[in-house]
Length: 321
Image (cartoon, rainbow, N blue to C red):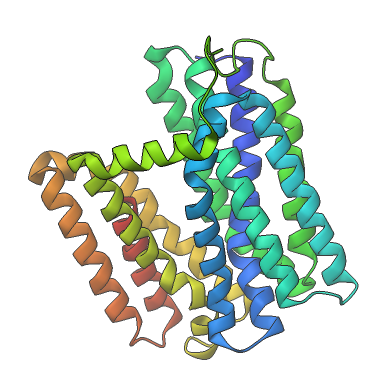
């Protein structure tokens, strides 16, 4: 059963954007490793991305609540595409540098937060409540296939051919996502009009932070999620160097082990609800975090690419759970 043309437009935009994300996940660290062999500078790229997303999370949440979400989705993707195409041109002309890469990643992180928030907020406006689970499932499936399975090996293959090639494609895909979003209906999707003046954005963001800090359950889950996200990003920030130096993998091999590791996410997406039904939320969270820690300890001591891919699959499974 079709979920309608607006959903198809949102799904297509999401799929194109997630394919670009998957390509970026491989090609950007590879580019950083090509510019420097200092692991601190390579890891700093992921750190910059994470810090930017953390800093803009609350202000962007306020903006999504205030302005037309369709417009935000279109503009964020189009600007993201233009910025990345500009980076690709610089790399193509041998003008690429770490400061330029860092700046581009900061912009990408900011605009990704805006696009993701707008996309999530749009879905209930274009899909009836009774179909939301099915719509979310289709978007999640497209995200998993594009971001985890198709993007990494494609990024590795293109980078092996030419460093600028995957970056050009990323920019084109994000721009295409913005153009696909033009098919979303203009009316019914904007933020609800307020009869009284709104408080300044910073004040609203701080009010949200105070509410979060004062809510034991939601605040606790947010803290666990934040710490787990930091832990999740740490190994991936230098994984490209680990793959080259300890696993003896080239760009293509690096992309392949990431694609194989995504199988863990697929298993996790199907098994989480059953696991939670068996042992409850609390034990599921604790067990998954301990599993992730154990898989990283094992990964640190292996030099075999196949074993590393299997351990990464377990690691991504824990993150999904």
